Length: 238
Image (cartoon, rainbow, N blue to C red; front, top):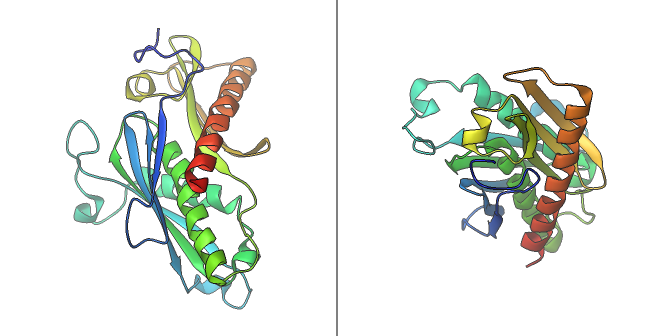
């Protein structure tokens, strides 16, 4: 039995509230159960120096966790004067995941920055960030198309992410904190609508696992991402 009482292949409840902030070109508050992340997309008429003159744009991500997103208060990274390795890893993952579904030449010479701020953490903050960032990006690009700034849609597909793991010997979908902190294996999958894999991170935390277990985790991830794709579609079409 999972601590939450969910079945092994059952996701937490997913909610996506779009237009959560006033000023960003695209924004949403995404919740995977008790994990809540504010995702915003900011369109900037500039590009990184190494892209100048190439006729293409850039999509990048930034990630942070608010001090009381967890059980005890954590120091702000700005107060410490540097980002942790975990933060840098996650924001690079967000950028790579979103660029996997964006035609940068069609985007034109502009940059879209995706800020993912964890308000409350209960496991799966990076996967919720990626899934919500796609929604914010979709809304920002829709605005560019409506304004005539770009003619063609640079977004080629949906992208979503979900965690899976082996908990008490059983592969399970969408780990919350009690499972994540005690799992024998932990995996994060970033999947593109249509069946392709953008990224897979899988680690044996307590015990090694075999190929069949990895495939079972991937199958669970595909099931979970189908539900996320449906939630993304509803959120961006309402």
